[in-house]
Image (tube, rainbow, N blue to C red):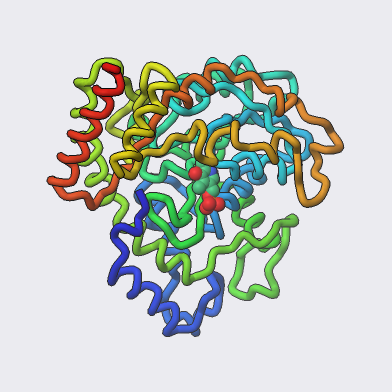
Length: 399
Ligand SMILES: *Cc1c(COP(=O)(O)O)cnc(C)c1O
C-alpha cells in the first residue's frame, strides 16, 4: 500500500531543489525560491488526476478533514453522521470543530450505507462525513441522493482512497469538499501531509483561508494580506510537498500495479466457496490498495488470520480486534477523555457512545479480512500468496 515502495531519485531531486533554494515556505519569497513551488505543483498534480477544480495541500489528512468541515460551515453543536469503521481522525475532526458525531451503520461496502445514514438522521443532522474505506468508494448513488433529498451536507474523508473513482468521478467530489492523506501508510506519502479538493470556488477559498490563520492569499506581500476570518496553521512545508509531488506523479502507475496483483489474488479466492468480497458498485474505480474479503462468520475469519500468522504470511489486517480502525478499540472516545474540555462535554452526546448498538457494522467488520496489496510484488510472489490464501481459507472452511 505505501507509496514508499517506490521511493527513489525523483523524491531526492524534488527535495534537493527545495533545500538548494532554502525556501521551505509555500507562500511568497518569489526570488528566493527560483521558480520552485512544490505545494502548488502537488496541488496541480492531484487536481489533474482527480479532475477537481480546486486542490489545496495541508499538513496532514486530519487537517484536510478539519478544513473540509470548516469550509462546509460545520461547527458548534452540529450533528454529523460518521462511520464506526474509519481512522479516528474522522471523529476527532468533528469533535474539534465543536460538532457532535452520530454513529451510523456501515455495510458490505465497508462504508456508511444509505440505509444506515437514513436511520441515523434527526432534525439536528447537519452533515454526513462519509469515509471511503480501504481504497474504494462508498455507494455514491444511494448516498448522494439521500443527502440531496434530505438537504444534508456531504463531506468526504477520502484519507484512504486517493485514486479511487466512482462511475468516472473521483472520490472527494461528490459533496462540498473531500480530504486525502499523505501520511506514511497511504498510497502516496509526503511523510506527513494531506490535501482537500472541491469543485466549488467559495468552499475552496474558505478552506484555503482557514488553513493559514485566515490569510486571504491575495497579493504578493504576506504582511499586507487581508484576513476575512480566523483560521489556524495547517500549512504544508515545501519539503513535505516535494516528496508528495514525486509520489503523486506515480499514482497512476501504483494503481495499475495494485490492480493487477489484486486481481490475481481475488481470482484465486473467488473459487473458494464461502468467501465473499467487499461490495463495490464500480470495481474499475478501485485504487486496489486492499483485497477485502469476508468469511461466513467472525470466528472463521479469526481462524484464517491465525493460520496466516502461524505460517508467517504478512499483510492480513483484522480490524475487528487487533487494529485501531474500528470503534471497539476506541475506549478514549467512548469515555470522552480529552486533554481539555470540548464542546461535546457541555452540549452532551447525541448518543451514548459506550452503549452504541451497531450490529450490522459489528457483523461486517467481524467477518472482514483486509489484505494489503503491494505494487512491487513479483509474479512468483503473487502466485505463492494466492495459492496460500486459497489453501488456508479452504482448509479453515472445511474444518
Ligand atoms: C489516514 C487517515 C486520516 C488522517 O490522515 P493523517 O494524514 O494521518 O492525519 C483520516 N481519515 C482516514 C480515513 C485515514 O485513513
